[in-house]
Amino acid sequence: MSINDCKIIDIETHQDHFWNRGKLSVFDINTFNIKRIFYIYEVPKDTVRGGHAHKNCEQLLIAIYGGLQVLVKDGNEYKYYILNNPSKALYVPPYTWVEIDGEKDFICLVAASELYSEEDYIRDYSKFLEEVK
Image (tube, rainbow, N blue to C red; front, top):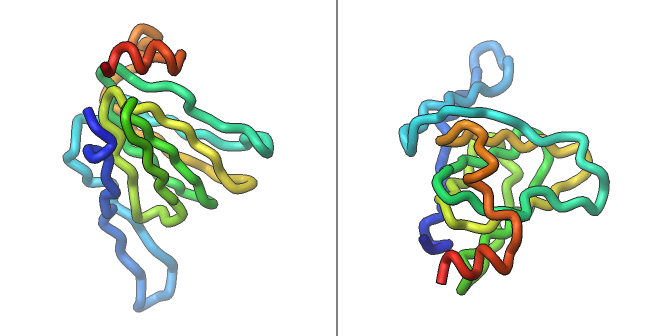
């Protein structure tokens, strides 16, 4: 995998112009079959989340509240993405190292292609580099 496989995906969003009742985003994304959804919130200041890669799991990251800076690495290159719009998702393929740093009070929703399995995680960056080389 390469960080070039990471991409921003537009989530279908509708504005209620007639009644001015806000927006509705429809999560009809056919990138992969979603098996698990979780969200990250109440993260202490100056704390980075993630810090791992997955062997099989694909993920979509969405900043549903606040803003995030997401660092992705493939062992050769790195790239930063800013997520601050709930109508945008970041697709993260397997074997991509991810670190998430957010604004105060952010909420990051993650849709995953796999159920939780500790065996799927690579939590040590040096081991990640060995596996992707």
